[in-house]
Amino acid sequence: MTVITRFAPSPTGYLHIGGARTALFCWLYARAKGGKFLLRIEDTDKERSTQAAIDAILDGLTWMGLGGDEPPVLQSTRAARHAEVAHELVKRGAAYHCPVTAEELQARRDEAEALQKTRSAEGSLSAADQSRMEELLKPFRSPWRDTGKPLPAGAPTVVRLRMPDTGELTVSDHVQGTVSRAFADLDELILLRSDGSPTYMLAVVVDDHDMGVTHVIRGDDHFLNTFRQLPIYLGMGWPTPEYAHVPLIHGPDGKKLSKRHGATAVDEYRDALGYLPEAMRNYLLRLGWSHGDDEIIPDDKAIEWFGLDGLNKAPARLDFAKLDSVNKHYMALADDERLFGLWSARPDAQNLSAPEAARIRAAMPALKTRATNLVQLSEQARFLTNIRPIRLEGKSAALVNQEARARLSAVLAALQGVEDWSEPVIKAALSTFCDQNGISMGKIGPVLRAVLTGGAPAPDIALVLALLGRNEAFARMSDYAGSGA
Image (cartoon, rainbow, N blue to C red; front, side, top):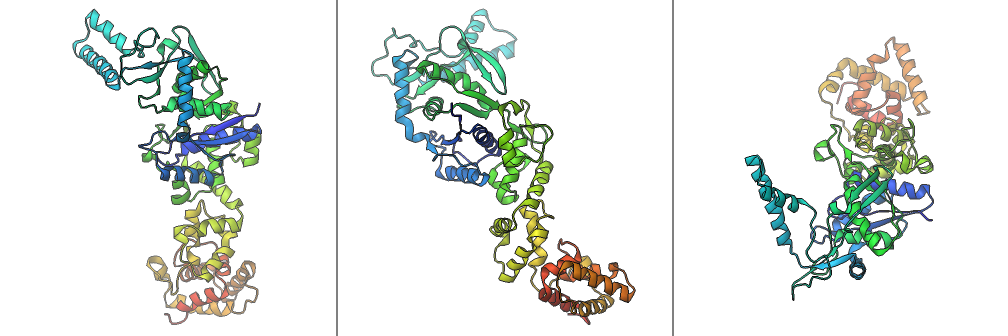
């Protein structure tokens, strides 16, 4: 059997990191088993589904490296097939036409709610009202579920799933364990609306079957849906997939992840926070799955080790400090040219001059080890892009007094004799200068840092000089050397 998994988001908004994690688990399981990972866009909700959301979801998945093995399936294009299955279920006696309207069902719910309020206010109900409330709170069973009752002439009907009268349904879930529900406790859900359009519940099952999905890995908020959907498989005589319902991601406070906890959309982690896709894959993998005490798990090991038995039953908590640590690891390992390309495409890296771009590209090996993410990389690179004359403020300005300017002029003269403009040689030249003048590095280091960086974050001063290049470094020092600028 070829393992086939799928990720099936609804295009009503951005790609949530919880969805990205689900897609990752599906992708990894397919890769681990030598199978296929498929994408399906569940766009049956025409009022809320948008092309912009579809594009954003696919863009986020592509950035994460989780593209499908086949072109995405648009669920809305398969409505005729969904309706075909609904009518076949009617023929098999597993579904029926029902004229009960949505208004009638709402009236039942309203009546039950009114009786509940009465009981809360008065402490009890009459035996008749108590019996009526209990009946209303049971899963709805239509008077037309038995085929002997004729339908009202000309009345619009829906196609409703018919649950078996007795027995129970058992699901053996890879995460939730073995759980059973009586058929009598399950709603007879609508498969086709009165206008003939299929519902989400029907479409999901038909598409999973037709796509050959063998393993459904999704959030545990869909666990109850499994019991509602399996009778469709049973009614059609189809084989059922295996299920793994993973807990949702919670915020650091243990509550359901929301905007109040910070970024929740994948594009925010990429664009606003500057994380790398390989770090996001590693971090999200560990957010609900474990392999001993391993924290850094590259893709090849993730594929080798991943299994459904490693999925955790308890909700995982988002930990930005851990994500930063993982991303910093991958920043240091990233190819310099690739990292420069990712960084230079960001809005905060636009409008660079050719010399500035060249300096940053050359400095990437040093800069990437000092940055947690691409946002910090911009901050670490800022000293390389400052436009002369560098404006000094606060403590930096206070350092550059007359004595400092004179010493700066002397350092400049000493460095002009350095032919090999590399960090070790520059460092040795500065040390020699200090020895010859009987001063410590503390007398020239802060002043050099001020005039070379303007107080921006930067590495050791010898490396700063090397990264700036001889001409730029001398120009910045000259602006404040001697009698001043």
